[in-house]
Image (cartoon, rainbow, N blue to C red; front, side, top):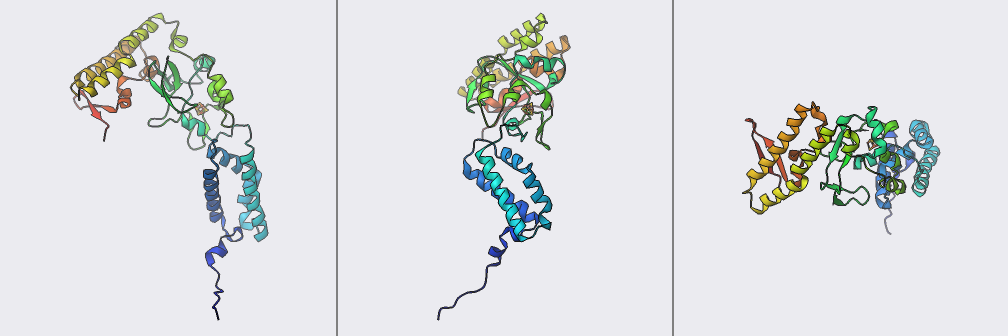
Length: 309
Ligand code: SF4
């Protein structure tokens, strides 16, 4: 006679909401979200869904009362959470829940409408950087690289990432939410149309900001001409093609650009922390775009280090 195994797998038995303690519930919820969202091929950020569900009364009540619920109440509560997920995925609320995902993908480019925010100090000058014509950037719409046809001014990003400096990592909220730039106001992860519309508005330039200081505008134009991104690109290309023989020329140009910005900063009393707005990013900061880092030696001299493996 065939032997029938009547022992029940303990793992299977326990894998029911009835037996989960609070820690298991949290872990199961996390696993469920990760698994469901990775299969759903969503274009909307995962965090967006998570924050929306986790601020719902159903979720908060379930987490709060779990330890006091009996078996069937737990089964019902778990079912309600799964249903909440389903309905949110089907119909995303057209409202920003400040999940922070857009702000991690890049900081905003400013438009003329944002000038007042700068003038009244809502956005400090030190948090701005100018990207000059011909610098390579990424399109926020199709995430493809392109060369900037003309300059634009952006809020700074955290070093080594695309995250806007105004995103509070702990709370995932914007530190200047009520005074955020027009691009951020139009940003909607559930609908790209408003952001596309706003991108057609005229961009803010240094002339809009410093136009009344004619001397500064002339110096900026001189810097753009003598230290253009095109020049930097040409000289790096030449160095690579000449197998490093033109390294002195590159260092010369980097030194010249560095001297130019600091010479006029001193003459015109421009604070050091606003130089990236006035003259754009320094050549030394742009060197990694060509696969190099600029290192200053203890004696003050500079050298180039290749980032190539
Ligand atoms: S300014 Fe605020 S809303 Fe805009 S990208 Fe930065 S953190 Fe996000």
